[in-house]
Length: 505
Length: 99
Image (tube, rainbow over all chains, first blue to last red; front, side, top):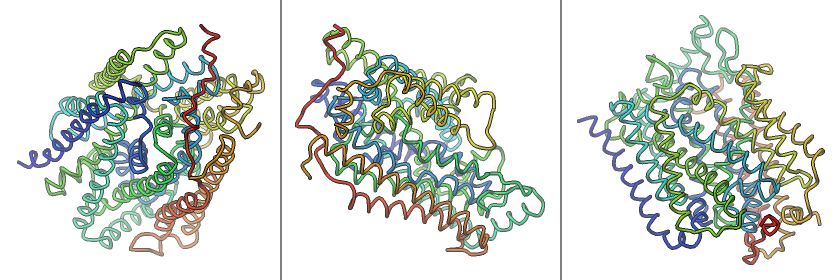
């Protein structure tokens, strides 16, 4: 009975998501008949401020922000919340710096994907193909990681087996993304973001009431920290660097690179950038900056803080810190509220998967297939594009699910590089491409390949500079290669210059 | 909505991007100074709503500061203009050359 009560809100939510997917497919039939890829991949540039903000935030908040992050906060304390709070700048920085330029240039050049913009800016097919391949590889592996995480939460909280959970929940997300396209992704992301917030409040209420109020919880945490300082067992939960036996477990260097990895460099993530091509007008992007900042802060600070406070409820755990949140939900919440709360982390996972899936599919269909047709001067049949887009999206999703049933080591391994790898590859390509007139194709190609190589090789071999995260190696190397390449390569031609830098003429 | 030429829009967008970077830099500095600063000064002995002051001021403070700065940006720096260029579409990829 309890399992049924816990599952029912999840079922209702899944049915709503599927309904939205099919409803949007129906209402956008006319727009798709005219220009399939524009409607399917960016929703015909129609997003308003609220939906834009929610879809951006939902893309950021993945399984880690709802599961692994708060789990580590349970163990390490307030330092880990401090660490996670670096993401507060992410939403406004991408919209404020790139948002309007991508939108203006996207409209002027009729660009539908980030790779389209890169192709127009650098006039290089080689660079466009490399970009598309990087996107496909990293998106597929990231999706796989999300599928694994989502299925684990699903099985831990509902009692279904991992495989059954995976297939059930993957079926829903792949189906609504495939039929509904970008608009469905944006709307369902919004629904997901809203239930994430509701789930967070339910969880917060449960933790504080079961823990006997903030003061009692804080007394436990102070006790744990005192014991840790005295005996060296556990972490000082009250310190920013969470010392264990006098050694900082989150060193200052790691905080510096966290500001890059989760703060400033998120500017380079193609799954966020593509959202700059999809909104309606300047009012939308302005309000999205505000809503996005409010919600991303609430989620990052809120969820991780709940992780810390849950120490007052859950004194010990069996297994990894990833089990903290599922244990809390199943053991300390009323089954119906638990059902609503479970949707939170599932929604975080699904919204990330759907965004990656639709953007990954666009890399294959728009950037590789349709471009090669256009280059040959062949007529493009909108119906055929439609069939191909649906098929590619579905296949990409299904491949990721199949791999997630028994994840191969190599993919789990690539997944570790994906987040920083995408930033290394695209940060300078976009920032310098849109703000430095001299930047050219040679520079971009060298930067992308050189940066990625440096990042992946040092990650793989475990080479580190002090205790910094390797993103610093990737970003710095990418910049150096970019500048050298730009000085070696041919200068940009005037046509591109006038389009991307009219203020210089 | 302000009427602007293509060139004027880019001058405006460069200004907006610069202002965004400055806002981000202010948040980052505030975060470092309050978090590590308060902890270095008083440790966790001072609390706000039962939780350590360094944490409350740095995490919630940076969040509120970011919101305030974004409001300032969109009210004072950012300008509304038409993202379209009278429906013009310009393709610089020289399709004819490749045919």
